[in-house]
Picture 1 (cartoon, rainbow, N blue to C red):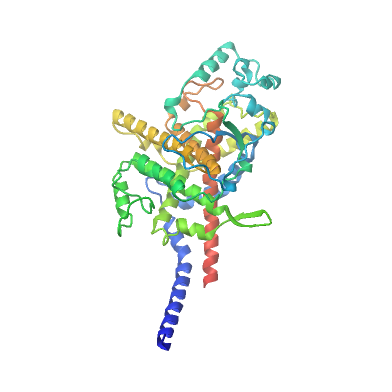
Picture 2: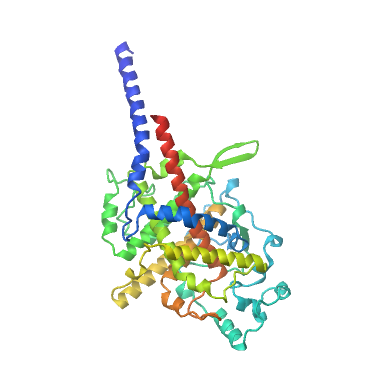
Amino acid sequence: MSRGARRGGAGQGAAAAVQLLVTLSFLPSVVEAQVTGVLDDCLCDVDSIDNFNTFKIFPKIKKLQERDYFRYYKVNLKRPCPFWAEDGHCSIKDCHVEPCPESKVPVGIKAGGANKYLKVANATRELEDCEQASKLGAVNSTLSNQSKEAFIDWARYDDSQDHFCELDDERSPAAQYVDLLLNPERYTGYKGPSAWRVWNSIYEENCFKPRSVYRPLNPLAPGRGKDDGESFYTWLEGLCLEKRVFYKLISGLHASINLHLCANYLLEETWGKPSWGPNMKEFKHRFDPVETKGEGPRRLKNLYFLYLIELRALTKVAPYFERSVVDLYTGNVEDDADTKALLLSIFQDTKSFPMHFDERSMFAGDKKGAKSLKEEFRLHFKNISRIMDCVGCDKCRLWGKLQTQGLGTALKILFSEKEIQKLPENSPSKGFQLTRQEIVALLNAFGRLSTSIRELQNFKVLLQHSRCHCR
């Protein structure tokens, strides 16, 4: 090689290094500039959500998730995939979920049925599933026979037509309690064709999308030449509000899960002691505007949109929990009272948020057409909840099922306004009900979104630091 050629190569290398430093220093401002402003299809802005979440919601929802009532979630991780032959369960050790021994589950939770959070249920011996429950005593022994009969009718009421999710049968021998605090959502190493197959099925077959329109950066889609994905968004903008919302909810859920994996990544493992923390490289791979061809910021904005939807659902369902008949029951009267007080405090905060999404703008057209579209919307989402049983990693399946069920419960709440308004104060309602499984999923799913937005703020700080070091 000639000296001139070597000088040219060295010059090119130096230029490339300078370009890399410029790119890195410019990157944080690009992320911040693109994930800001007013969200599409609503009147709320990103900064308002950031401030509200940081100073009001996040500290309280984190404490609520640590309460006994919300940390134990009963789930069936052995349900077979209903759509294709499973690829086999992940053998990576971090994919494992440690079920909770029966002795560790609070007696009031395991003693009752799915609706054991109601004082009426605690006082109705005919509906007890466990002999141990009789030792706990009735919370309210003065209920009339009429109230007891109403509860029995209510407990038998089949509200499956209102469900947006496929619920696990908690009576199944395969259903087990899991301590969510001991099985945190984090990066397990589960990836590749098996994981992409799940998300591909969700997006390609359930997001009201023709197969001829490919979502951006889908590794399972055929080659599209130089198509940068703009045709997808042109198509998306042409959809009705309801179908755009559906896509944004799924994209936001996907973004939230990816943020958790980036923020709780296995950084190193020495002497059998793993170290978990934020992984900048992984975050850039999934959300950086350059590496994702502008797709990352769109995903993050959809996370904020999803947060707004679930925030609205909590506000709408507050009257359901504010009734004296609802008692988040674990068997420890003092702790249960503290848990409900904390939950009601969170509801007060959600009500104070000034820029809620207006769900009345959805399914508001011709009554027959709106009803048909709502049913299609419900069935598509219910199908997605069933796809979660196809996830090969148990820990990913656990958190996928919980967050999908939480969103499904939020949707059920949003479109049950009339039923919630008619709730009686001192007895159950046939028109609207939530199982304990739905309640735990709803609040934990929202807690995950709150955590995602908080983690995004942390990544922005890390990006800022990396920019300073590059200068």
